[in-house]
Image 1 (tube, one colour):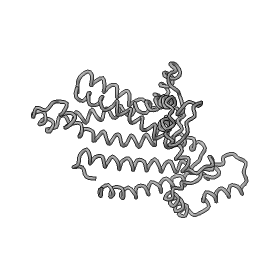
Image 2 (image 1 turned 180 degrees about the vertical axis):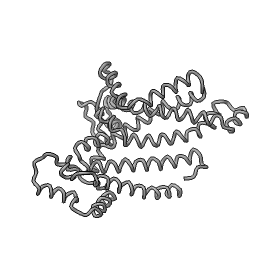
Image 3 (image 1 turned 45 degrees about the vertical axis):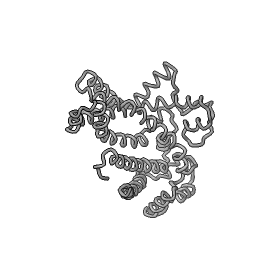
Image 4 (image 1 turned 90 degrees about the vertical axis):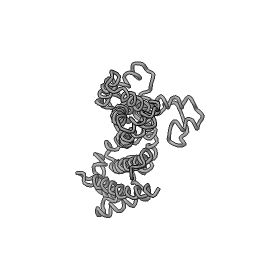
Length: 333
């Protein structure tokens, strides 16, 4: 526990640095953010000055930075003039959709990648292994947005079995309690709506999950091949242990450490980098909010999202480091 607390303390300067970089990056972009935000609207200089004062842009840069950091500590991420709402509320409203999509993507990828990677490693050099390696090479070369469009054309347009967009059918009303659609449908006792929400998850989760699973499968295979050649695995076999016991108890645990690293990085990337897929499937998550904010030049929202994405990476890496010590206690935090 002490090591975890020390690791948390070490993450604080990183988080502070991320917040400062996110703040400065948008301040040093060319152009007046207020005039860019207002666009071609016919407003007078008095209104422009009033909006600049409201956004604290008329103050010295260091004072602006202090106000921004103070707001972050209090949970105040600013106010979106474009959407006329606090940024924190916008993020809270959209984040559950992104987390739900990310969770199903990770689940899908793990279910596919772990058995495929392990079986391929145990039959290294066989036709099955070559087939897996070739398939993963094709999968990792596919852009996610292109694969998503193919899935829409096949399963939505041609076969008509899966919806193309949204989290649930427009005619279905589900009382919002947690923001997680699957949980809310279960709390409402509406199994038909639960099934509909699952159907809406399939295409975006598969689109993101296929790319992730092929990367993970290659990592698991390589790691298993290396571990299966270690002396302690040979020793376990020489003791007469069953092959299943050798693989699961002695090899798999150590082979999962590189896979854990990749999974941690992918979770951070999925939470922060699924903007295109969310836009393609009209998934009302944080990524789609960021894309719409970029087009609307709503820099306050973009600034908060960039900071949140970076902090997500810091948090996920911290969790991965802690899990390292569980899989291999000799690894120090």
